Amino acid sequence: MGMTLTEKILANRAGISEVKPGDLVICKIDIAMATDISSPLTIKVFEEMGGSRVFDREKVPLVHDHLVPAKDIKSAEFSKMMRNFAAQQDIEYYYEVGRSGISHQLLPEQGLIHPGDVVFGADSHSTTYGGLGCFATGVGSTDMAAAWILGESWLRVPESIKIRFTGKLQEWVSAKDMMLLVCRDLGLEGGTYRALEFGGPTISAMPMYDRFVFANMTIECGGKNGVVIPDDTVREYLTGRAKKPADEWDFFEPDADATYYQELNYDISDLQPMVAKPNLPGNVVSVSEVDPVPVDQVYIGSCTNGKIEDLRIAASILKGQKVNKTTRMVVVPATEQIYHEMLTEGLAEVFHEAGASVGPPTCGACFGAHMGVMAKDEVGVFTTNRNFVGRNGDTSAQVYLVSPAVAAATAIRGVITDPRDIMH
Image (tube, rainbow, N blue to C red; front, side, top):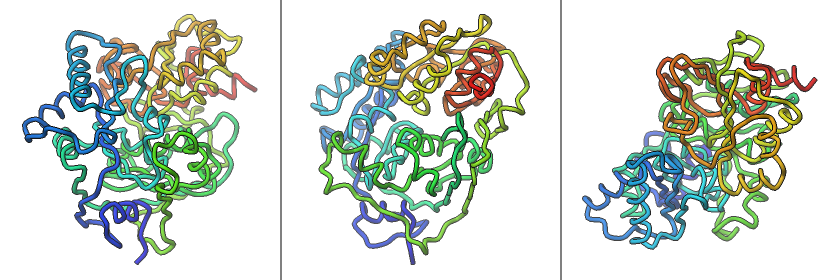
């Protein structure tokens, strides 16, 4: 019997010839990442388990990204605890404020993720790494602590959902709009403990920055992991940055006779920019169907759409324009490297002249902690991945999820706007 891409990866890391959905396997772990917000509890459990040294100092990256720059004393203490642990363990890939970024963009950028890897991350959006053709999933503090000690963990092999895209995108339509379609059709639980496998000629023609979006928002459908079939685009992305030598990259492909729980097929030739209305990522309609509600805040950033390409798209729409006087705009690049590129390319100047605030890399506003939190009854347009009640601030705030192009057009008009209306 043929295997899906996820099944092949897990079988390989478990050291067995084949697996099927429902099997329990023990897999070697290539990366076990934690952040400033997740590491304190993981460290505590690690010590309670009797852990003294992590299994491999080069496979436990620690990243300051959620509550940074420290928003209060408690968050400063969280960072201090991780900082001390990193020093004690002599962690090779420790990313301090000023040299860090949002972990889900930072680790691929720094060459720590490779096709065929098994990656654990102490954050639900750790599924993002699957854009490089690996198995990546979020785990809790107990599982992470055990992984730090053992370098392996048990997994139940998930069923797979095959998602295939054909057709050519129209201008100002993007991977975010495509993924919102999937969220609409699977809903919040349609992919629960399943592997979402993305492929088809449309994705094969896409650059890496788009592919990460599919894997990133897999968790919005309940997915265990999301994986994009790796190819020469992945090989090109990794060349010159990967920590592992090329002969250790595992480019698996699904078998033609693999069995899937479900298949979704999309022709996106006529796809419009899409919008997820409050309060679910799956509450999706086209931009033309959204009422012209006045928008208080536009936020561009996050592990979903804080990449340099996203900022270029937004800046191309905002160039020579002004943010609407009734709207505020916050722009947050995903990593310090992206911040640097934004400065050298003149994008920061475009945002500044338009009247936007540009902040340092942080997850803060995405989960309602700081640097862009919504007040009572406010309306926000975010390029993030979730818009649950209270996710981005007050429980009465209404948040819409969009692409960077829609966000930039909305900032100019002050109401949710199709970028094609600005750039016609």
